[in-house]
Length: 169
Image (tube, rainbow, N blue to C red; front, side, top):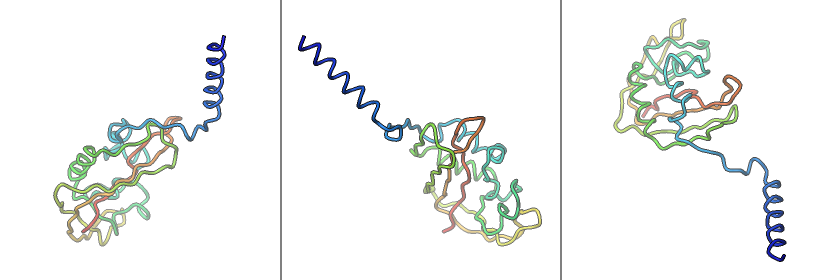
C-alpha cells in the first residue's frame, strides 16, 4: 500500500511539474543550419529573392532583384561573380553553426565566417540606374558575414539566407 501511495505521489508531482513549465523553457530541437532544406534552397541565387532574401545585392555579375534604392550595389562589397558566392557558401556549409529547427518569424542569426584564404572582391563606388555596379575598387576579404532570418513561408516558419556579404580588409 505504501509503495502504491508513493508511486501516486511521484506521478502527481511529475504531472504538476510538467504542467507548470512554460513553453519557452522547453529545449528546442537544433540542427546544422545549412542542413535545413530552405536554408540550402535560399543559398541559390535564383531562389533567394523569391524567398525574401537579397543576395543579389552582393554579387557583381547579378542584377539586384529588389528595389534599387535600397538593394542596389552602390556602397556594398561584392563577390565578383556567382561562382565566388557559391565557393564562399561551401565554406559556410562546412561550419558547425546550428539553428532551431522551427524558428520564430523575424528572428535573425548573424555569424561571421573566416575564409580559408583571402579572396578578391569588389567594393562598389557607383551604380547605374538599374542598381548594377558601374565603378568599383578591388579589395581583399578574409571573412563573410551571413544573416539568416526566420520568415513565414506556406503557413510555417522557416530559416532562409537573408543576405551575406564579404567583409573588406
